[in-house]
Amino acid sequence: LMAVHLTRKQWRAMMAAMAEPDRPSSLAEYLQAPKKRAPPTPLPDHCRVEPGPPGRWTVTIDQFTPTPLNVLRSAHWAVAYRMKNSDAQVIGQALRAAGVSRAEGRRRLRYTIVMGPRQRGVDPDAFDKSLRDALTRCGAIVDDGRKWIEAETPTYDRGPAKAIRITLEDV
Image 1: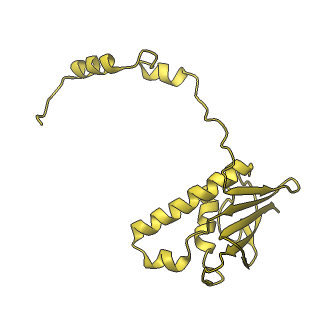
Image 2 (image 1 turned 135 degrees about the horizontal axis):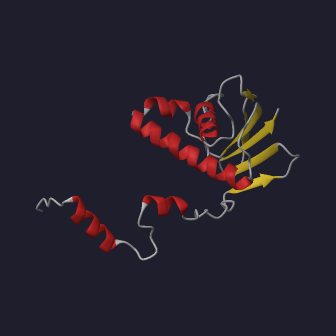
Image 3 (image 1 turned 90 degrees about the vertical axis):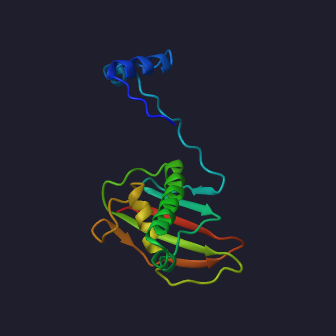
């Protein structure tokens, strides 16, 4: 490949030739153009929402549990970041689809981890870090400190497949 040096005028002419016909040609036009809104996210197949009183949401995500703390601590920092990012995306998508509003105050968090039939047990606080970081990242809680969250001890059940049941309630 050969490096080609273009003047600003040549570059603009090239970009104009490549532009789509309905694309705004200037920044001012772009800023004044109507914004395209994404359609509301449908509830994923692996999520269920249990009805409750206003200010209380219970969401079950099947075939998913957050990454345990022991796995995060023993992984390379970039791999741990990707695992936490993946957890945040799954949890955030489920909570947005369930209609959980952005947190403005203190919330109570309860969650139940459903272990699969042959899944090994873990420490009681193993899923706390990843879950709280995901909830903070998607806006379901303001912060994961004691000031903003009233967390109860997680409960564990056995079931036919792994899952997590998250209950958020305005306090």
